[in-house]
Length: 287
Image (cartoon, rainbow, N blue to C red; front, side):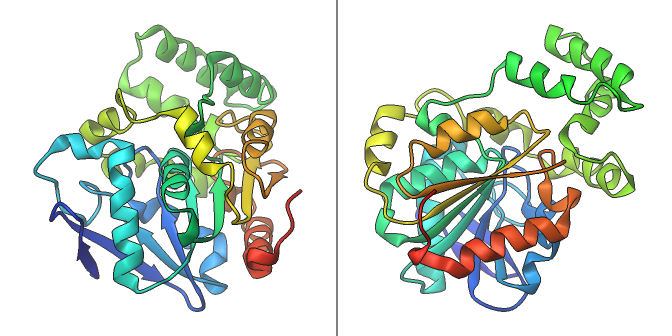
């Protein structure tokens, strides 16, 4: 398993899959091992995926100081991986909660980015979050699904703070465009892959300074792709549009019928969208 030392000495592991130009991939969760990304719907057939296990997850080591699980303090880990790989500039992809990490990296190291791909990504780093109203709006789109009534009742218990473990399992369909066997198998891996203590610290007090991050990204020259799922609540497509407006060379693509894991819902469409963006590279025009 390839690895490298973070600036604080923590040994961090990464996984390599596929052929072609490297694409650095940051997993969300937050603090979920990168294995859930898989081959990103076949993207590994077009690019060499380098998926980082964030500190304390997957095959990476546990840091001596748990405070370093905070999102902003992991920016140095991403930069250390870039240097370890000997890349002058990187194509960086981030999913879900890792959107915050990627945005902070872009703000701190804008000249190290060739492109930035944000997949159903958070932007708390920019002061944009997802609300209860957003989640209810997206949930309403699934009212005709056979699992909806039981899942929505479980969601209400989660929201009220009275949920049992079974309720957390029951709401999983909301995160997938299709609640089929592949989605169910994918969802079943989440608990084992997630470092709960690290997840609680990831967005803890001090992690984000939105004004500073927005200022740091105001002159970002790298093209940015934001891919949102039509059925996803985090972010809703209209919230993703708000995020795109804060990035100078951003384009938004909404994948029809997709939830929070669009590479599972329509692998071919997902791969085509991301690969086309990456092939345009820095010359790609903003939308």
